[in-house]
Amino acid sequence: MAEVSSKELYEFKKTLKELAQKRGRGTELVSVYIPPTKQLSDVGKHMRDEMGQSANIKSKQTRKNVQSAIAVILETIKLYKQPPENGLVIFVGMIPKGGPGTEKMEKYVIEPPEPVTTYWYKCNNEFFVEPLEFMIEERDVYGVAVIDRNEATYATLKGKKETILGHLTSGVPGKHKAGGQSQRRFDRVIEDLAHQFLKRIGDHMNEAFLPLKDDLKGIILGGPGFTKKDFYEGDYLQYELKDKIISIVDTSYTGEEGIREVIARAADDLENLDVMHEKKLVQRFIQELRKDKGLCSYGEKQVRNNLIVGAVDTLLLSEDLTSMRKTFTCSNCGYQKDITVKTQAEADNLEEKCPECNDILKETDSMDLADEFVELAEEMNTDVEFISTETEEGNQIYRAFGGIAAILRYYVDY
Image (cartoon, rainbow, N blue to C red; front, side, top):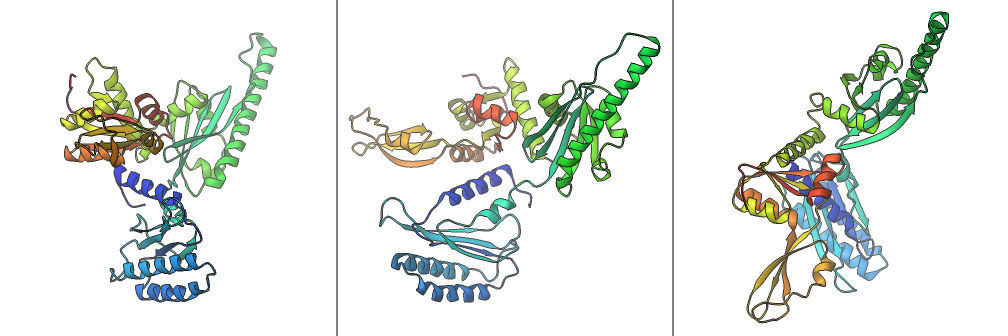
């Protein structure tokens, strides 16, 4: 995928999520994917053919809506001499807003982040968004394993998501204190058991990682002792996987905590991954939080105030932030009040009264809370980073700090 900013990626994901949730009353939502090499005259001819074919649709309403959508697509492609560099994606259809008769024609024209490779025309009760979702899916994968003599855990790191694939225990006993012949015999037994354990680790990792080898960018080994190096130097991994080992790091832990430690310690090898960029930002925020007068703030009210005065260097917003900022207005005297709500139902159930004339306030404007904060940030030249909840750090921003945090340019005392 072409290089896009955190904000652009968030906006694109948000649009796709909204499109994926839209439904038509019948098979009347039209999706068209136009590759950059496709002649628009050919697309126009195909659309006119489909207009003719749609006359056979039995339902009068569905037939009318499909034909209206096709007409909108024909008008849209007239605006282009040729498709843009990555092609064009057009979604058109009648979307119901409530009961029968509330349908409104909606049109979305998207220039995708990667070239469209296949021409598609789809007519269904939902928009065909899967090819666009595939474009933004992180396809590079890293293998991660943490190994010592007692246990081993192996996982994948895909984009920002760590997935534990397996955990093995060895049963290899500790040192024997008998001495003499008995000691040497026991040592040989222990070494054989250790060898068998490493072989078992290799078999499991081969089974897990070989199907991914075409997407696997590298494997990182970690662990608290020498066992990881014994594993690397032995013939336990299939040769194609062994060639992909890019780093061996020392850790204090094993298990899932060891996997996270391996990822953190291998930051230089993973520096191009978004997950490392996010981890570093959140860790920087946490470091400032621990200071007496740290350059950080969190929570909607405090961060908004810091944005307004220009004190925010980097705004951290959770991708899972879904709250909305609503404006309520008194129709009698014009008094206005802004309120943050988590759902539209919460807004509908509010019965806020005007402090001036006691009339019930009515909702007159609405925007996503994230969009409001982005607008404030742009006014002050503040960097915006959208943080995934697929990492431990991202979850912390969402759950502990409400999905809104900031690294400051200077300390503000409220």
